[in-house]
Length: 132
Image 1: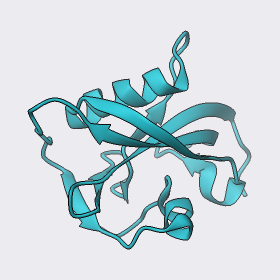
Image 2: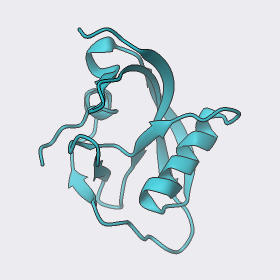
Image 3: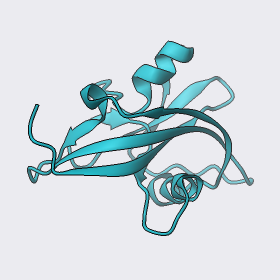
């Protein structure tokens, strides 16, 4: 494992549509598919961070439904950025639902069908690499 430069709190959000498909997005920095996710900023709660990230990344207003889990395993939570920085994330993963009447998803976000159970949540909660 590469030397870790930083440890950061992060959030990820699972959004299901009426057919139980999961919203994924393709990361601009490394080209991998994954759950909408991001960093917790100074002064905000993890729930606020999840709501903000969904608005910024997918233009969706959400309501947190429940906590799915907290993930810190280095095998899945250490991320090497293209600039060489290596960050170990402590990631809080939420289940959320879209609120409001509009359901606008920006380009590069796609609904991917998955069979969801506890094991699938744990595997997909952050390192979903379903290909390009």
